[in-house]
Length: 134
Image (tube, rainbow, N blue to C red):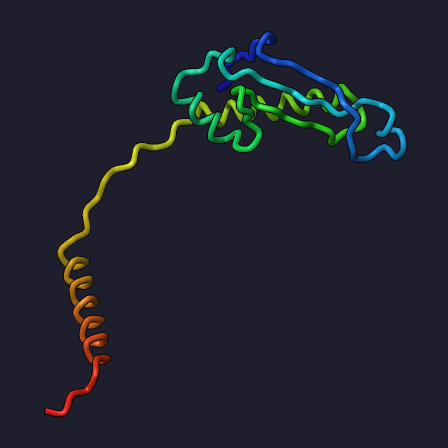
């Protein structure tokens, strides 16, 4: 949603050493970022809250926080921006409502085809029984 502002108090950033490009430098410089987002503090409407939990999947912790790990880039600032962009994209997707499903019923012809198929299958199975000589 374009007008949605992510509150800063809902975010917690921690910089850790991470893999990716950078050679031996990645082992000694903490450039990867772990962004923790408290879902309750985001203040989302109920439909967006539930959809965001669904979109988060395995990134959702037991404390109702989303954990986003970003280590694509070589600098802290680029990884920080990457994590925030991914969060914003996820929240934007959560605000999109799914179209309402319209319940439908099968037509007469479809019901007749189903019954005919069942009768045909039944006759095939009935022919598999023991043969009796009367």
